[in-house]
Image 1 (tube, rainbow, N blue to C red):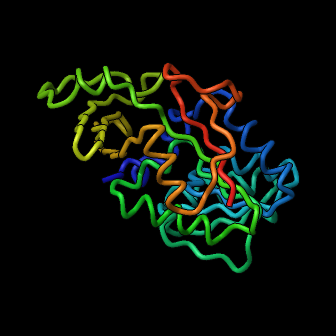
Image 2 (image 1 turned 45 degrees about the horizontal axis):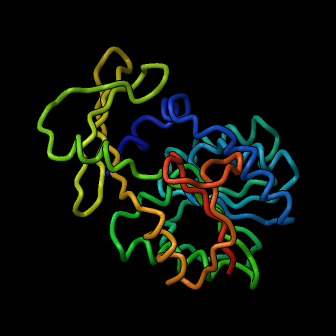
Length: 244
């Protein structure tokens, strides 16, 4: 259940600002690849548009048409509509006309795959889309087991700020099995209280490495953030580059 994206695409762009350095990280990879580049979960184009501005041909795929409408308007305003092709599609089953050197899944979008079958289907689709020797790059959060333990099964309806601006509030429901977190959201829009939800399935480093290996990828690099800091158990992020 991820209806927040459809209900509030403009608000989402204001409140979900990514992680430090992610635009530069993915843009650098895209430029080095020579393109074209597929970005899964392209959303409103926060990363794809500046990458297209750097001269890279981009294919942005997203399941939510409302997000793509915002991305199209922003791509047109930025003058990159000719270099950014936006397609409504599913990361688990997308098919390209020709193979590409790079597929990216920025800002934890991979975690919208909420069971084993969905995770493997997405990675298999990425593998099929890549040229031999091509790369998949993605980032997911590194699960904090202490937070998960404290919040698991909590019946409180307490909401806390979901974004730095305080525009959205959230109640997080962690479930160790099947390793999901559902964020029940509320925000104020048009004089009324609106509600939506997001569900993610978190993965550990070991689980992600196994998933990639099962899909035929070899992990080339693992970082703890998008500034390419070495990964450690205390890192907040898992940033993978994996080669086909």
